[in-house]
Structure formats: C-alpha cells, structure tokens
Length: 363
Ligand SMILES: O=C(O)C(=O)C[C@]1(C(=O)O)C=C[C@@H](O)C=C1
Image (cartoon, rainbow, N blue to C red; front, side, top):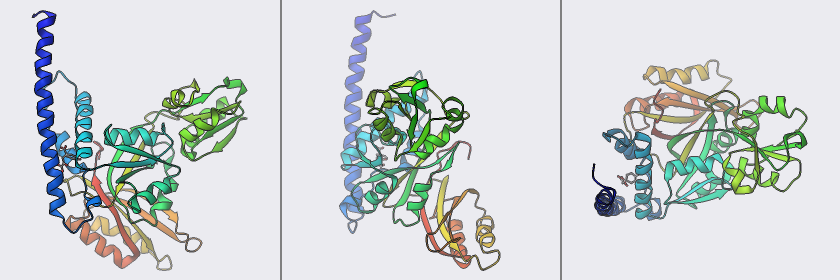
C-alpha cells in the first residue's frame, strides 16, 4: 500500500477534480434555471419552479452506486448538491412550523438541504398563508403520524387553499422528555397535540398527575419549559441544546417506527413520474343516499388505488363534511382526469390538491 503522504496527495488531486466537476454541474444548473424562466414567459419570475421532486427521484433512482460509499451517504451528498443547485437558480425560502428544532424543521432540512433559507412560522396555517401570498417559495406541513394519525390543523387549513402539494417526505420521530427539573418534580408537560398524543401511554405511566398543555409546536414547548420550574416539554432531543434543557427520558413515543409524513406545498405540482399519488378534496350532498359511496367508486372504476380518506367538518353547517382522498396516479394521467370528471357527478367543490412522487417503497 502507498504511504500516507502520497495517498493524501491523491485525495487532494481528486478533490480538485471533484470541485471542478461540481462547478461544471452548477453552471449547467444555472442554464437550466434560465431555460425554465424562458420556457414560461407569462409566469411571474418568482413562481418559476426550481424544486423538482420528479427529477430528484429520477436522479436518486438511476444512480448506480458501486461502493464503498453506502447509499445513505451518497443520498446525503446529492441532497446537498441539489440544495446548492436550486439556491443558484433562485433564492429559495422554505416556511416550516417553528421555532427551530421542531420535527418539521428537521424534515424540511432533509428535503431541501443546507443552501436554502428556512423561515419559521408560528402555526401551521401561517405556513399555508405564506405560500398562498407568495411570501415563501415553498412550505412544509405535517400531514399525518403513524401513531397518532392525521394532523387536523393541516387538514382544516387545507379546506380553503390554493396551494398545491409538490412532494411528500417522511421522518422517523423520536420524542424525548426535556426539563431542567427531575422527573419527580415535573408537574406540567408542554407539547404540540401530536407530541402529547404520541407519548400519552408513557405520560400516563410516568407522570400521571402532570398537567398536559398543548402549544403550537414541540420546540415552542421546549422554549416554555426552559423558563418554568417544574415544567417539561415533549420534543426532539435537538431542543436540549437549542433551549438549554436536560434530557429526562428518550424515545418515549408509543410503539415502534413512529413516523411523521410531511407535505411540501408550492404554487403548482410537479410532472408525473409513473409512481405518483394525488390528493383530492370534495364534499357530498348527504341527503342523496349513497353519494359518498358512489363518489369513492369512481376511483375503483378507473383502477385507482385509495390510500387514505379523511373527513373534517366543513364549517358551513353542522354535520356537513369535507372529504380528503389520496389515490394512486397523477392529475395529468388520463384515468385520474376521468375519475375526477365522474366524481363531479356525485360531489361538489371537487378540488385536486396536488400530485406528487410516491416515496414510500411499500406502496
Ligand atoms: O433538472 C432540473 O430541473 C434542475 O433544476 C436541476 C436539479 C439538479 O441539480 O439536478 C436541481 C434541483 C431540482 O430539484 C432537480 C434537479
């Protein structure tokens, strides 16, 4: 084997080649950005889409990794290459549920990397407002958790939105109990309702008498617990350093594989990849017997698989609901177009909330 100085010389030379290649790639990315702007002259320049989940999936899927780097390491490296790439094409901002240290912050970072600007928002509806008003390029919202279910704040705001889903991303969620008081002195526990829901069994066993207080986010809970004796927060371990709190207990979520699914929102969806999902929102006239059943049957008629159904009160009158349905396919696919057309016969206010590449290997 060669000696250390000559191996390091080899690394130096490879680094120079890598930097040159990365800059060559960056120049092509700048050209892509200009081509996108020229393609759609009618579009407000601000609205040109630089984040292309369909293209990223293609890049990740076709990469032939012969090692010794493992796939996860390579994925992280490419994540940062593409983060720098989109930031070259335009100034990208991503709104997320703040303050820093929330699981949303981590999910946004895993999706967009280091080179974009993250803008914390006080509540989920503010994220959607920011995308709608054009105050941010993209927004990331929590959609559902594998343990505690749908994030109702997201659904309720999604009843009235002109934003479109552009991508989905999943994050493994490990909840911790953070406090500057020992467990036996904790009388109050702050968290987002999802955080409290995911750890309710643990709290019932270990802190049955502590008051549970819902706040706007897990990191806000940490901020509050940091200035109150006897208070704790259910949040990410990252908040320990960020807000100066001790980790009293780790991994207190119920069950295994606690995972949260997030949606990336923008002004438009991306193009089909061949493995996409579409989210549709509609209401039915419940005085018409079988209206919901007939509405759902159209998906079967066109060979579309259904993955998720949610309903939320419409806010129009009591016992009137808005339905959210997630099906296979892309809104530009013929069978999805036809299914939506038929759905209009059985329901009102049908709205496609967006199509996005499916990133789950099991679907
Ligand atoms: O192909 C594009 O549309 C690009 O903008 C280039 C590029 C890349 O760097 O490869 C950049 C960001 C996108 O999310 C996907 C791909």
